[in-house]
Length: 417
Image (tube, rainbow, N blue to C red):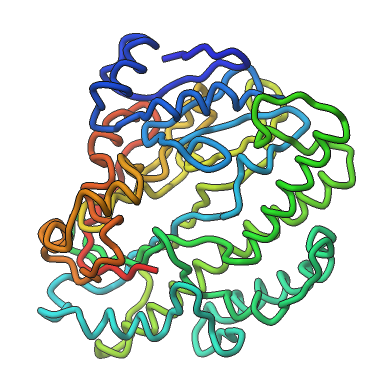
C-alpha cells in the first residue's frame, strides 16, 4: 500500500493493513505480528532527500540508526551515507553440505566449541591473516584477498583517518563480529545440513561509514542545505567526496562477501574434524548483502538503490531470510517485483529493543525458547531470544508477491558473536 509523506511516498509491504491511519493505529496501540513502531514511519517520512518518487518499506521494518531498517531508498545522483550505515555489506551466506541429520551426534557441544575456536567472534581477530590452502577453492579465495589488498592501498577515504591499523584489517578477515551476527548449522526439509552465517565488513567498514557520514554532514553545512534530519545529508555525484565514498563502499561490500566465504571455509574444515571422509559443499553458496548501495536500472532511470535491512530479489535471484535464534529461516527466490525495487526482507526484524528484551525476559525464557538448539543460554544473549523478534512466518506471508520459498531451514546449532 502507498503511504504518502511530506517529502516522498512509501510503499508498505505488510498484510492486514487497510489504510495509512490503520498502520499508525496498529503501530501505536495494537501491534501486528510484524510490529511496525510509530517511530519507524516518522523516520521513513524524513528519508526523502534527493529520493526517487517512492521508497518501499519491507515487512520486517523497525526503527534503526540513520535509516529505518527494512527500507529501500532509491536516489538520483547521490547516496545518503547514514542510510547505508556503518555495517557496510552486512549480510548472509548459506551453503548446503553433504552431511545429513543422521550423521550428527546427539550432542553438538563439541562441534560448537570447535567452530568457536576456529572462527574468532566479538572483538577478536586471527593471530595472522588467513592464507587459504589445501582444497580446490583455496586459489580463488586467495586471489580475492590479494585483490582487496591492492584496492585497499588506493582507498582515499581511509587516508582521512590514516591507515593506522592495516594489520587488523586483514586479521579480521574471516571473523564473525558481535551483536546479532551468528553462525548456524541448520537442517532443511530433506534433513540435509546447511552452514549459514550473518556478518559484515567488520571494523574497517565501520570506519568507512563513519568517515562518509561525517563528510556528508559537513557538505550539508557548507552548502547550507536545510535538512529535517542531519542523517539525510548526502554526497552528490561529480564530487571528490562521492567518488571516494563509492570506492570505499564497494570495497567494503566486497570485503564483507569474502569475509563470509572465508568463514564458511573455516566452518567446513571444522566439521571435517568430526566426520570420516570429506564434508563438501553440495550447492553453490547463496551470499547476499542486506546493508548496501548499488547502481541499478528501475523504471527507465539509473538510480542508486540503498537497501537498509533489505535484500535484492530480482526474478530468479536466490536470497536468505533468517529467523531468530531457535526458529526457522528460509532460502528464497525473488520474483522481481518492480514496486519493491526488486527487494525483500532481510529477516524477521526486531519487535522490541534490546534493552526492552533484557527487561522483559530471563535466562529461563531463553532456555525454553531455544530448546533443542546447541547455543549459548547465558544472560549475554537474552536480547537475541525468539520473542524479541517478529514471527518470521508472518513476515514471509506478507511478501508473497516478492519471493517464493525454495528451502525451509531449522537451526540445530548457533554461535553468537
